[in-house]
Length: 124
Image (tube, rainbow, N blue to C red; front, side, top):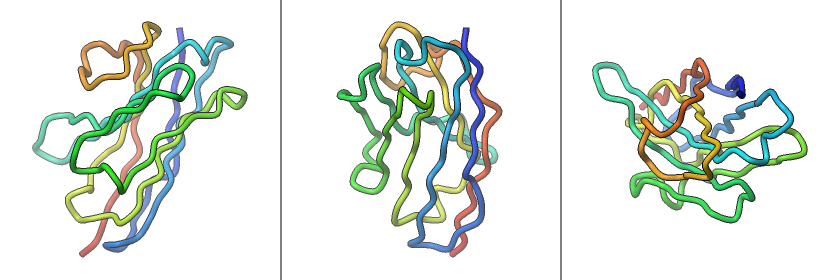
């Protein structure tokens, strides 16, 4: 089992950047694929990006490609989401999630473990 804690959210102007971090407990972090999701008010939770055990495999939704970068440091039990060129439509609570099957796709039902979320607000 793994516990996840997100940090790094905040208020930023359009075009700005933020880096989200997700710290995981447990000794086997390197065996969990990790994902980032977001949920805006009144909307369903949406997949953003995911990364494989090793970090060599990544997957993004089209709307964040070339703006967001997901990465991980297994030695620090941490996954990151670097968000650049932020837009007001990126405003949401961002969650990290984990699964132990090296699945790094967009199906949120396949991620058993979730953090509490961190708020990202992009002002226009």
